[in-house]
Length: 228
Image (cartoon, rainbow, N blue to C red; front, side, top):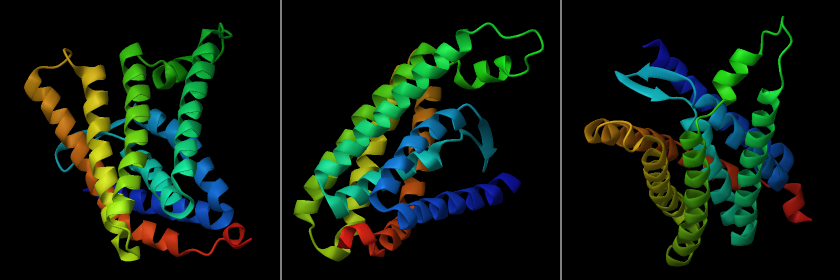
């Protein structure tokens, strides 16, 4: 029960910080959020927890907030801004991976206490790294395209929930499918692989639905740079 209660608080804190980042820094804050969220998600995914009898990895909450950011950018600033933000996040992910892999190659001093911990966190297996990069690239650009399509089909102001949940629901399914296929296909039996896929997607989808009121709040903010 502790993990469930702490997990709810964890989600609330993530959403509150997302709102604060946008409220304080506007569009630039969304870019910044996407940059560090891509890095944090890939660090958190190393840790596994058990919640409601299901073993899962961390990172899903902050990763979902990336979709929140691109959807909000698409809603308020247009498709071009959303695509640019996806590229920014992709560069952040690639750059941090390259830099940390190079950092691990340095020979540590005899009394060093960080090398083994850094290897655990950043010493990603090639398949996991490839799965993460491919899943991000494909799903994020899909999210932008689907959101733009839904924005034309459901343009009414109060249909925002259709646009954001529709685009995120589909793109996160593709994200989970791409990642699990590249990272785990052949590693686990088909039934175990399906369980990992379904639980990963369902958890992300639940977080996405819970984020809908947060996005409505964020959209209502009056940002000074928007009025300039």
